[in-house]
Amino acid sequence: MKIDIDQLAEHLAHTPFQVQGVYRYARNPGVPHADYTDSFPGFVFPLTGKIQFQFNDTPYIFSPGKVVHGAAKMKLGQKVFGETDWEYILVLYRICNSELEESSFSHQHFELLTGQSPRLNELIMRLWRVYNQRGGISKFQTEMLFRDVLNEALLCVDNRQNSCESHTLFERVSHYIQEYYYQSLTIVSLAEQNNVNRNRLSYVFRRHAGMGPAQYLLKYRINMAQEMLFTSDAPVQQIAETVGFADPFYFSRVFKKQIGIAPTEYREKFINNPS
Image 1 (cartoon, rainbow, N blue to C red):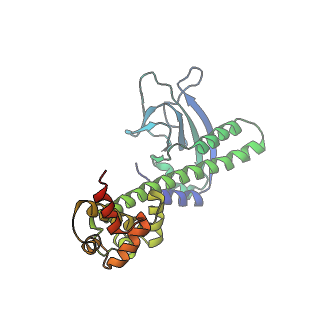
Image 2 (cartoon, rainbow, N blue to C red; image 1 turned 90 degrees about the horizontal axis):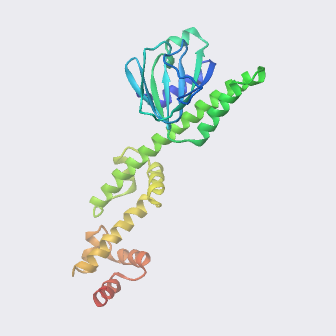
Image 3 (cartoon, rainbow, N blue to C red; image 1 turned 60 degrees about the vertical axis):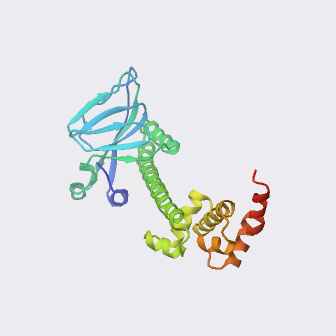
């Protein structure tokens, strides 16, 4: 089941809850595995391997890079993949407000795609160790650490989603530029066309191309001009207009700045030395 990460974060921010148990399960001898849901909801943090559990007939594969949530007293099925070892940590919790519990995410099953996070693994292992200590300080640390674990998991999901969205945006805009580079494109029009602001578009291009969208467009136009200078006999002015430069003098200045020599020199150089 897909979950809105912002809604889940807001829910956790306003809902008082308390850790009821932190348990480590593995296929390895000496450590039993759970075969039914407990009387409390819980988050599963896979550490190694792969195993499938079904919450009310909905399958979830427990494997590193994700966190799975299951509600209390759900119908549970299990499927083991061959002889592969697996290990996960289960954190059970209780909603402390009965009124909030009725509208809580605690009644749902869902998964969070966190990706591989050494820090998240470190926090969950520390939580397990602290829970198994005695004393009031360890109980207090358990509550604080569980919130740190959830915070890190939510940040991982958010960063992963933003990364996927930014890559999709970059692919869409860059392909558009490559197809319509010869038209009168502006960064404002590209941003508006994709329902983002200029700062967001600039961030995405710098992240994925190492340059802003204006520089990306300029370089692509110059690259196309280089190809035309080498493969055609068209005048420089015509080539400038063909790749999107209304002013041929401006085109020449930009070309020389990017390539190091003027367009006419570039053509002569390759005509005389085609190799």
